[in-house]
Image (cartoon, rainbow, N blue to C red; front, top):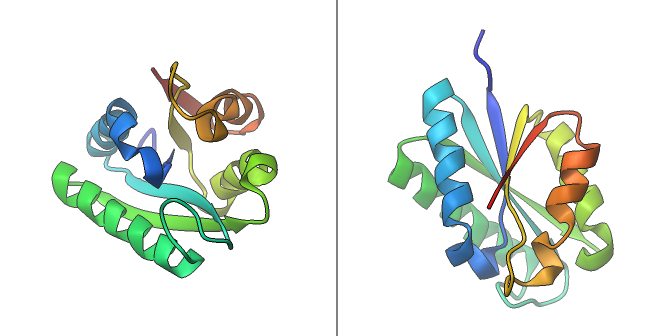
Length: 139
């Protein structure tokens, strides 16, 4: 039996440049354990900085997942979640995604000074406290 089968990685497509260590960690663990990675992005139905529509956001997230799969030689998927208010609904959406994709590990970037507070400020902590699976918070 393998230690991990499905790894979930929350991503903020507006700030992928700050996720390098978490993305590499998830890819390394996926290769080590033969696990798949699902990149989870949360958006709203209103236009945002990444996409004007949820469908456009989903296409961009799937493209991102494909690039990560090619770059790291891993099996990857994308799951986009549309919420009413990201500031209010993000933690619940991420925790629900863990169950929905049957992840057995979550790899998340931690909050860093200067990193936008709307996505990872306390979300890594909340997911780590409430998820029923292991959560690796990468600084």
